[in-house]
Length: 266
Image 1: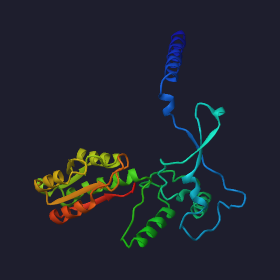
Image 2: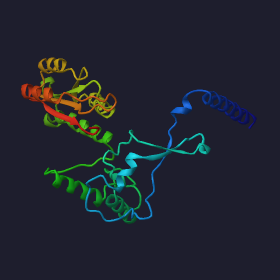
Image 3: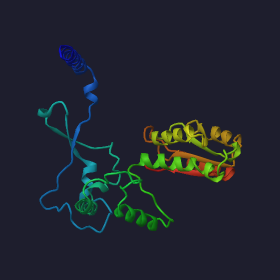
Image 4: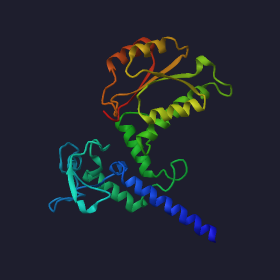
C-alpha cells in the first residue's frame, strides 16, 4: 500500500513538473482552438426545406466566419476569424436539407452505425445512398466509406489484390503483378494504402519525384509489368501546387496505364 502511494506521488510530481515546463514553451500555442459555429438567426429555420444547393446561401456563412475561443483562457473571449482549414469545402454539413435528413435518420436508427459495415453497421440508408450515387454517376455500383482517408486505403488494398485473384492459387509472376507509381508528395492516405499493398507483396510500388514527368516516364519505361497504375493528387494540399495533368495524360497515351486522381483538395 505504501509502495503504491509512493508511486502515485512520484507520478503526480512528474506530471506537475511536465505541465509547468510545457506551460513555458510554445506547445500551448499549438493546442486546438474551440470553434463556435454561428447559430441560425431568428428568421431562419435550420431545418427548412430547400430544393437548391446553389450558393451562396445562408448555410454558407460557417465557411466564411466562425468564432474561436482560446482553449487555455476562456476569459479572453472569442474572436471572429475567416476559416481556411476546413475540409467541408462545399459547406454541405450545414445545408438545411442535409441537416433535416440527418436528424430524421438519427430518430430512426439512433446515432452512429454501432458497428463496422462488414458486420452489422451497414443500414438500408447506407445502401440507399450507395444506389443513388451509382445511379447519379451512371455506374454499376458504389461503395461509401466514412472518410476520404479510408477510401484511398480501401481502393489501394482492392487494387493490390487484383493480381492474386487473377492468378488463383499460385503466386503471381513479376510481370503479372500490378505496378503502382505514386507522386512523392501524395497525401498520407495514399502512402498508407501503398504500405498495405507492399506489406502483402501484392503489387510493386514506385515513387517518382514530385511532379517530375521525366522521372515518371523513365520508371514506366523500365517497368516490365503489364498492368501499370499512376496515382496522384490533383492539388497537393500541403504544398498548394497542382499535378501537371496535360503531361500525365500524354504519358498515359504513351504507356497505357490506369490513371487515378485524388481530387479531394481541388
